Length: 130
Image (cartoon, rainbow, N blue to C red; front, side):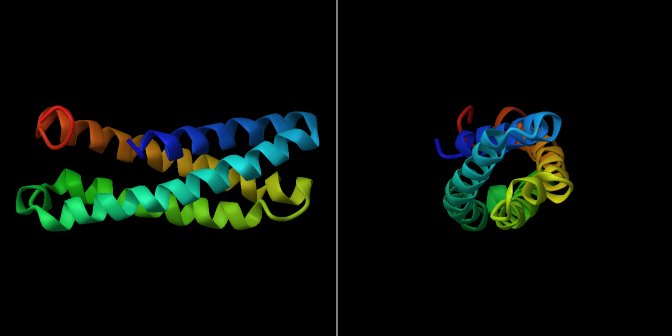
């Protein structure tokens, strides 16, 4: 139940970063900072549960998709944590260019890990549909 929250936050941060980049309206920068921060906090909490699941069950540990998913999500959280720190600067420097770049990279890696998560649930029957 924790996983959708950081995904929504990180995608939302990308959208609000783009909105700030196009409009220079400070509200968008503030939204980005809050979204990426909430996503990081809940994401690290979800990562703890994911790591326990990955390491505790041999059937999951033996799946390449599980490792791609886990390591990819760790990369997402590292990028997002860095992005959270970048978003502590004043509005323009918090978004352009590094905040926006980190948001794009975060969402791009999320696309890969999301695909692997889908494969784990629907192809390998790990988790919700299993």
